[in-house]
Image 1 (cartoon, one colour):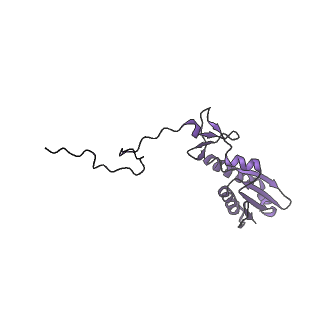
Image 2: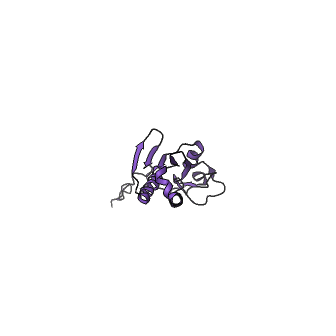
Image 3: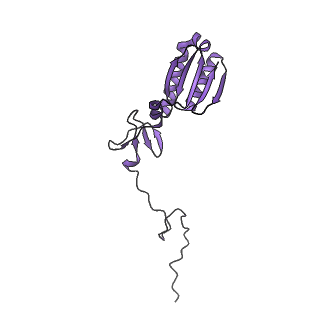
Length: 163
């Protein structure tokens, strides 16, 4: 009687499995505490490469998140310039709108924040850590006031002018 060849199987080999002769991928170890980082400034959590809100183990490593780093270094990703004649008639409403948008965006992602709001002689400047929150704020102000939006990409940050 002929013995069957046990070295050849009908199973297909996983191309990502290591070359150990096993046709399956070994189970990956669960994420260790070393893979989780927490921002010492805002308590955001870095997990699987994403910054999120959550609670981290007490012995996780500490790492400044990109938003806190931008705020500390004073390097915003985007700047909104709003002319005074646009903002003066509805100043309180516009600032409440800006803070509401910031609260919504920051709740979604810890990296979406306002760095500074500064009053200038002929305009108000809002610096943000990300272009997306800046665009959302600028478009909401334009919708509220009927102003127009123009955008200009500069070397260090995007500038959006509301006039």
